[in-house]
Length: 337
Length: 123
Image 1: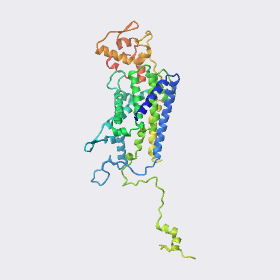
Image 2: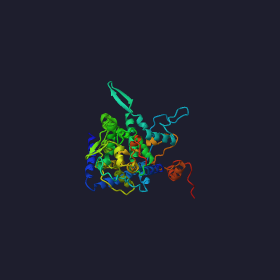
Image 3: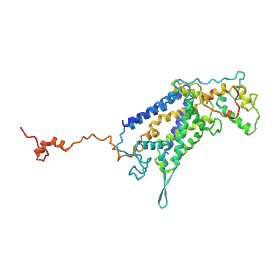
Image 4: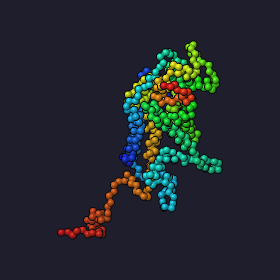
């Protein structure tokens, strides 16, 4: 029942925005004050988290390798799985970030009678994971039409591509369908797979429900509950926000403010959640370090500074005591007088 | 801080990227659209708020009814008959595509595919 509390929290957020925004004057709070606060929290929190990570030392060189390391010339080196230089690390990181390569290796373990343990490749998580992330990216780029004036061609291009099927009016977006499917899979996986269900926490479910709430309110106001949905009023508010001259021009549907409030919640929550893997992926020592510990010495930043102390210097320091104790010395004490 | 030479530029790029709308709009943006309303007609097939929010859905329903189901009968609103047609009904009052349709559509980057089949009025 770990999903009950986050689900209730998201429903409470929806109701809170839906009801409060109908009180006269509250549109300014939900349309202007909260978005600014959320964005400030997002940017500030994000930088704070990344700088804090940057301050933590990496005592050991710990790249995870899963291929042949650099060795003798006649042994084939796996450049992506055991990178030894910056270029190879960059290539590996790029493919990890853009194609989620490590998820591609996801396996499913099953125990059969016998008992017999089998592992098989399970690419569903990779498929729906990548579907979710790219759908979200396309949706964010598409939304820039409401923030940028005039709308640049890149945004229009993405939008045309996304609504290429020309189903209905307003036209259906393919990413709206794929993101809902992907979110339902990512949630269903946490329910159905017993191991994943066991390790799933409230902070795993909450972002899923929150993003699903954002997506559903967005779909509802675009396609189904269009009352008071004046897109130009929305755009004037959005452009006003980014030019720091916000105005609430017209009466906009409470559903819009609910959508906006959930987005603000996501922005404010982002830096303090697991969603920080967006920045964290770049700072993972197991990914961004080169597997070159035999070629380049990795100095532990924790190491105390130990100065070399040769035997000659040691004898210089303790010669008098050594002579006094009758310990043989290499260099005698200077003769007296 | 370790690797500040890489992390700080990365963070700066991230912040600049997120704040693109601020840099892009720093001129203040254009004025909100002012579509030119017809002078002689006083009523539409739906009240203003509704036609503003739902005209695309209405046109889509009309398209399906007329072209796919062959239901060409005119609709009656307040005793007045309106044909289910973009060109013969809507464009009769809103004669200019440029001064009416396009003002809002360009502002909000909406590209209706009406004009894939219909011929836009020459302006």
